[in-house]
Length: 304
Length: 328
Image 1 (cartoon, rainbow over the protein chains, first blue to last red):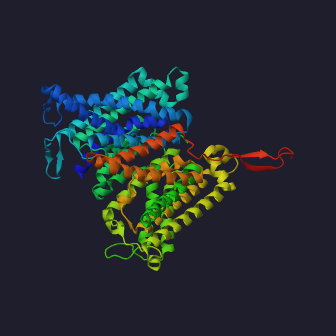
Image 2: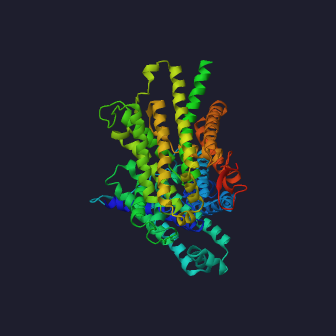
Image 3: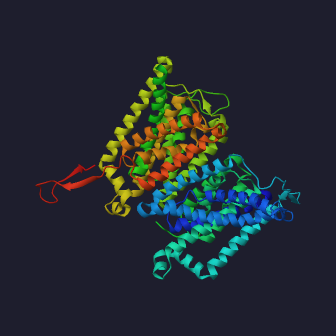
């Protein structure tokens, strides 16, 4: 019970990071982006490449940090992967979505996003292979926090949870304390009025792709650090991040964070009653449940 | 010669089955503007439904009611329709992309059930031994292949003619009106939510029929047959052929299935040994490129939707007589 709860909180923090950018994109560009979760995979694999590269260039950094399996090089690689994934999100938008946006309706974009996801996932498979990989082959020993009820926590998991909370806290400060944050929230609230007030929509959209890509990359690395890397990881996060955005209400950053934790914890607790093979469908049940009770989510507004 | 003919019959049977599913999708996406992100689930509901109702009994396994073929196929279609009805009821009055997300979720949930609910779906092993219709009466394998091709083409023709009638009727016009402008459709007293739900359910039942035919062709179904790529293939077929055009949908099905088969053959023949494990990925990338490329450069497809314009008849008083004329 308590173990499932703790694991759920951890998964939840990863889902939350992945959902923040998605909820803003869905709100501003008004389309469900099925390729968004592939950014997690892009981020995780980019970090793998940088990690190997940096370990050769700066062997001094390749030692483990404290009790973590996280190495100095991987910690740096996370930051680089965030930049790369953010940039890829912007490039994909410029290459595909912007062009389709210009001449077709929002549903064509949903359609195209499935195609983009298929391409991205299989390019990753071609480059890195189908097998699951790990950043480090060292065994991550879990610490027995309590024996009855049994609770095992790995140091990496504590790090991931803290790092995710720091990223979310940083985003909160940016949103509430900077002019850019005001502009972003203004666009999320009312794009037309924001433009009238001199906010450039295209700049905000680009920055949302950047932020979303970066946070997703962090989420991808965090998932890979506590589980493993596989080309299917992006695909496996599609439904959880959508569920988080729908639970929180499309367009609400705080809703997405809360929604992510709700989806993570619910999936963790569901393990007590459901065989693990059914857990991927859990976010779907949450979506149906929310659509029945509160179709616009916890913090969402009626968008018709 | 016999080998070639029987291979072509096999190819055409498969393409025909997929074409039926593409026609179902065309009613949803092409004519009503509904996004179905989980085609494979409705195809699969028809396949497993038909199998459970018409398959042979097996110890420890639910289903195997060995019902007559037509009843089993009808039941499979009905099951696909019920699944669509439930999903549609929950999502169709909301933001348009909610249906995309929910149907994608249905596909994930469906895959979970087919892989894990051993008592119902046989799990990863799947279900086997479906009695193919009239197989004993015909006997000869070659002749039976041709017979089955005929059966599939007959169903395809029936679905095509039925849909043509439907979409060219006033009902079809209302569906397109909803797709183009929901508010105007509502302002003239149409109920978009109900009509969308109907179109979604009918389209999904057609996909279920394709699934039912699939299981009767192979006499076997397992989660491997219903991989998520099937959804993408069926989309690529529709978007290449031309959304909103039923002939385009059938053309697209044969073209894409041909390209898929040929590319698979070419890759297995010419790709270096080290790459053999990844030929599937290369084919998936091709499907993705086809979808994205078509949407970017020719979103109307090879055979675009034929726009029906209403014009005033020559000589008649303005506004008195209105006829429909096809302008291409």
